[in-house]
Image 1: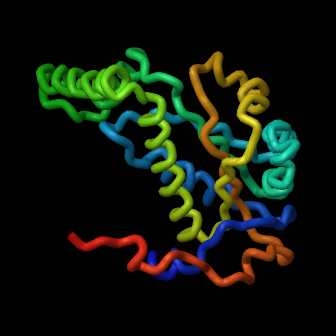
Image 2: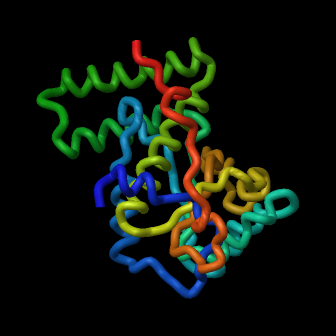
Length: 217
């Protein structure tokens, strides 16, 4: 099946079959795709918490209460749930870790090239922090690029998925001690296989017509 056909057929799953599990090898492939996601200046400002058992999913579900309670069954019945987090700030330590990994992976022909990369990244971070005043928003945009990549990958792999923005950020932050790790919660993603009772699977796909969203210059 080509990518266009997958895009036409994939949808946001509303109910999962709790008896079906994603094979571990296939899930590990999805994680590799997630790790390889693109980001601005390769900043990789993300961290992922993986819930692949009932106890772990219950911890995530603690944040799905009150007005968000309708999302709890998606997490609890999923095969796997991933919490996407974003670094609250891009620290010098994070920049050094990326630079050192670049070096290990052989991306620099000499020390000057390495220094140029270090200066370039620092310049971008300073720009978004000091001139734009929204380094966290810029960082979180990269996390959502990664979300888009794994959503498409899941469709290719024949796995159903649901991005979930409706959760109590304070509860999940406290449960996982995110602030102490310099992280903010961005979005949840449930993965698995649809239930026969998933009403959304039977509905036609609906998008705005191309004339509403494309302007040819």
